[in-house]
Length: 76
Image 1 (cartoon, one colour):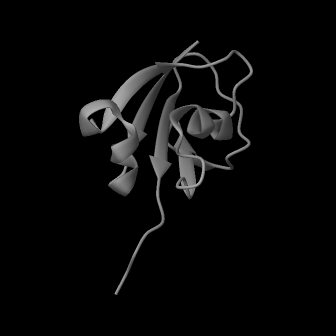
Image 2 (cartoon, rainbow, N blue to C red):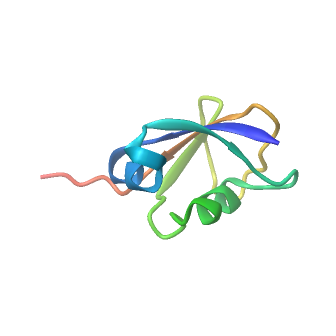
């Protein structure tokens, strides 16, 4: 199935050409965590939102979902 993925912060390094968003194919029973593993970003994803709502990384994906992945925030 296809999902739309938007990467924030340093996670953009896992996207082709550093693009901020893309469409990816994932397995039918995939979770947000599976998506992060597929991208090689599993150790860098700190939080996720699915269709505008914050969700745990264990949340299941559905076709045409919009996934937002966030890295650790740094403050001063």
